[in-house]
Amino acid sequence: MRLDERTFATPEQHDEHLPHMPPWLSQGSNHRVENGGIVRDFPDKGWFVEIADLDALLVFCQAHGECVVAASTWMAKGFPEIEIYDDYRE
Image 1 (cartoon, helix red, strand yellow):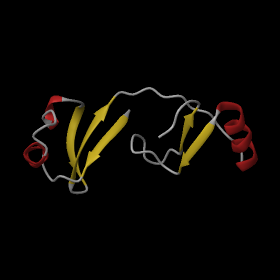
Image 2 (spheres, rainbow, N blue to C red; image 1 turned 135 degrees about the vertical axis):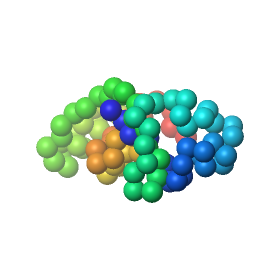
Image 3 (cartoon, rainbow, N blue to C red; image 1 turned 45 degrees about the vertical axis):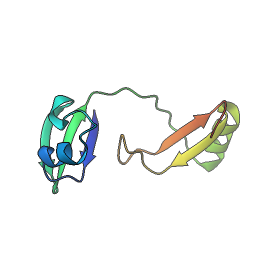
Image 4 (cartoon, rainbow, N blue to C red; image 1 turned 90 degrees about the vertical axis):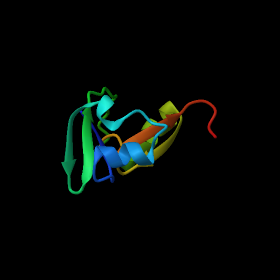
């Protein structure tokens, strides 16, 4: 499950400030307020690999293309992310 978290206090505030976006309540499920912001759930799929250490990460990147590593991703907080560029990159 992927959490979509925003700093807006209410769904109405989100919709007012982002009129070009679909209404907050029209997508996702389990809409709620947590820690002063709005949150909703989306079912999600992803590819996961376990990498033992930095040397293994370097081997992985050499095998799969140029990589960008982030300590956490906006789609799954607390999960490190490896973005692989095996073609053109801006």
